[in-house]
Figure 1 (cartoon, rainbow, N blue to C red):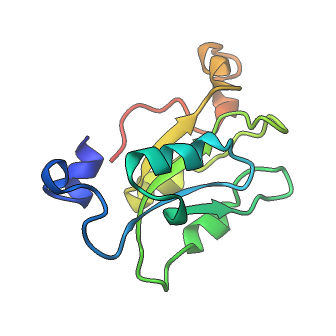
Figure 2 (cartoon, rainbow, N blue to C red):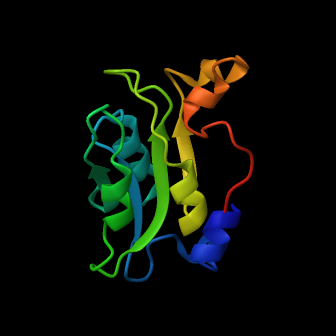
Length: 134
């Protein structure tokens, strides 16, 4: 809720996309279709979801994410990272960028989040197990 309050004061009364430019959600080209469905249900709009290309390891390309919408005047708001993509098991190491940019980081952990419970493998999860955030 704190992310909503900072980015869109009064959102509870008037909704999220009441003013231009709209809030933008970023996710990997490898992300599950549930990200688009959630954007539609939440009123964000599927047209405000950006599917970022992947790198050679099938992870969200951090450089492409950092450059996305910079010149378009959009309001970057949330990144949906994947902790183990369905197709390849890739883990997207974007927590540092989200922290630096003040973006809300949501981790889709349907496939790989259980690895966060294993101390020996937790560091391989790209910061997905961090507490806190904007």
